[in-house]
Amino acid sequence: MSVAFEPTTVGRYTLRNRVVMAPMTRNRAYGPGRGPTPLMATYYAQRAGAGLIIAESAQPSRIGQAHPNTPGLHSGEQVAAWRAVTRGVHEQDGLIFAQLMHAGRVGHPSLHEDNLNPVGPSPVKAAGTTFTPDGPQEFVTPRALDAAGIRATIEDYAAAARNAIAAGFDGVEVHAGYGFLPHQFLSTNANQRDDGWGGTVQGRIRFTVEVATAIADAIDADRLGVRISPVSGYQDILEDNHRDTYLALLDALGPIGLAYLHIAEGTDTEFTEHLRERWNGTFILNPYTPGGYTGPEALKLIETGAADLVSFASLFLANPDLPRRLQHGGPLNTPDFSLAYGGDHRGYTDYPTLSHATPDDDGQTG
Image (cartoon, rainbow, N blue to C red; front, side):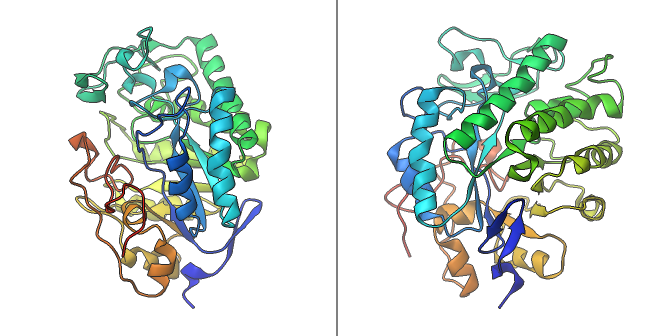
């Protein structure tokens, strides 16, 4: 049997296989208080054959919302709604982590009835547009977080992690990539601070490290993963001397004892090998696939030891029972991107948004 389909340990859990369902923004949180719906519970239960499901991004606070109709984990109403999702996965003997994602500067006032202005490390507007309830609009200039605001935001993450466990999730992943708030702190264009939260490599990595530390204190480190995306360039992020930044970040995260590190690989694919060598814990890889999506050939990364586990996104939309199909050599449905909105999401393997390859929205075909 291929190593990819053998059990493995991640944090405190034993996974049935090494095929991970990557987090995918779906924009379908139509439930009360921007919570998940029964259809979402069905969607995740169908995919519980994954060794680990990392659920779609959930904002840790109102101001952390990045896109329309995305779910939160900052209210009792949302926690109650998520329980149906986690219960459905557990009834199929699956494991599911929540992903916490804070928009930072790439949020938009139109997402909020009271027109909340987004926040960020510095008052630096991102180039480009974002999808809003009123269609594509330019990003706005964020309000720079002061030291008290940074501390409050870190506590928002910790509170949301506690809410995730209360909702039945097995753990939490911090999204520290793709141009969202932790990534903004890591960058050299969005973060122009000259205090202890920027200016140097140690200053820029501090926010991500302190978020991880606070969540580990709240729910235990062996239920926590961190996702990074070095040199992805997504949402106008620039990273001068990115290798120094990320090696320092891994050195600082290592002692926390995370369940895993999740790499959304960018253009510097050679650097992935250095990250693998530097990280002593479990290493999940979503390989760089420009203009396409992660396919069955990525399983070789597990066989060669380039990764401990591999995360798949689009193929899980088209093939809810993907691990079984991979193990038996197919057949595989081809993901259909024709329904994706927001063209900037194309080409990012875990951002097909509304795409699917099934005629009944989330049902299984093939």
